[in-house]
Amino acid sequence: MSGPASGAGVFVSVGTMMPFDRLLQTMDAWAAAHPATRVVFQTGKSAYVPRHGEAVRLMPAAEYRARLADARLFVAHAGMGSIISAIQAGRPLVMLPRLRTLGEHNTDHQLATAATIGQRDGLHVATDAGALGPLVDRLLGDGSAPPAPIAPFADPAFTGRIRDFIHGAA
Image (tube, rainbow, N blue to C red; front, side, top):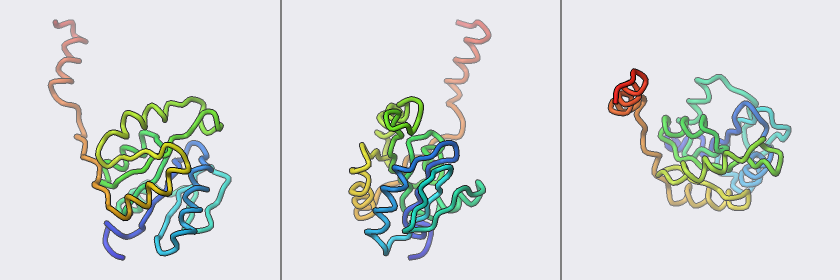
């Protein structure tokens, strides 16, 4: 495989702030069953170390962006940093939300984020770890359109309304 659309195959990231062993274990099992697909894992503070792909605890931001740009598919938690990174890189994203009940986060806000943001083209949500592998298979097999780009700045009409509000205009 060559080129940005096929390089790494799958890039898996748990972010840098909290461990997410459930995501790593699930995708490591998927990688074991798909040895022809290159998988790169960014493991962060997780205790689990994947055995069926390249595992890097932390990487410089430029390397992270390059690995994401080289991937066919991005798999991550449902954090806004991952979502924005996928949109900016133009890569389809599969999100597995962290769950408070499993001690993966202190709230279930990622469920709400995934439910809202996951409706956007190119952003997909695995409802649980069991759904993750089949969703990855489908997206790699059928292909997935990248997420629609977002503007780097707010709409001027919106910022104008905020400015008017702050300055007391009606």
